[in-house]
Length: 394
Image (cartoon, rainbow, N blue to C red):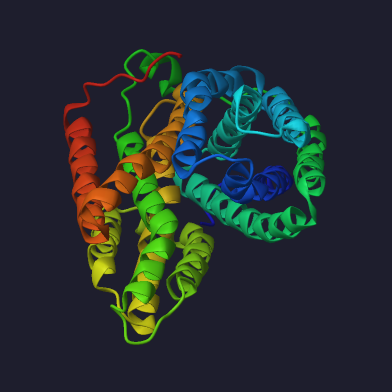
């Protein structure tokens, strides 16, 4: 790495601080399904309300990316954080599941789309070399995970304290993001690349966008349904000694963090296609073996495999996507990488939940593997044909 130009350390730390505080605030919403049920909503309404947030993400993905490239990231960060904090603060007056709640959740989703897209767009612009981008994205993914962990604990405590403490606590942390965002530079992205102007019209949609959607789908299947599956195993008597989901999730999340921290230092090796191919195979193997997981040792082993594979795939695929397009397309691609992950993460639970209801968990996990493999095949075809241009805007 000695031959690479140094990273702007203060700028990177500033970006990571924004990401950490924002996702700490957002992690309060892990309690949101409980609030919906408490206000008289149903489990089905939870799924649709959460999926509703996809609309702003898809509509704003390209716009936010282009704004970051042309005008910098300050205003998307400030406006997005204000919208998110305002929508959370106003939730203290919501007393039932209805139009008011939906409007505020849509307002939050607009703010989320602006912040999330800006974070990854700025991560793409802060470093010019793909190995350094992989390192920065890996660090950001770790900080996001830490923010989620801290925010989930604080959010649980605030939820037990009452409705006002919960929503105002989330909004208060969000205001820190507003301040940090206001200190971010308005300087547009550096576009000195010699291929920028010549290649802008011929830029192709990176195949990694499809792969990121598959990764989001796999993460949703394992993170959202595995705890319920383990509860099902314990209650059905299929296991001789009941065990908790933490036996899978704890080693998985720990290894995700460690892999992403270490990955940037070994990116020259870990960005090779055969390494990513092994990660895909390990991730599919994990999903395929989960239905036959019946002991704590099995859960820990599969959690470690999941952490090793999923942990590196997201930052590596993001870095490769930025490297496959001209510099001026990186903002749009950053937005669409966020949108792709959100589509895979938010939409797949609707189909996966239906499969569980009709056919059971084994069918769901096997179908998840098949769907993942199908998305990889689509990505492979896109990479070979390169027929899909990057949209100029949306």
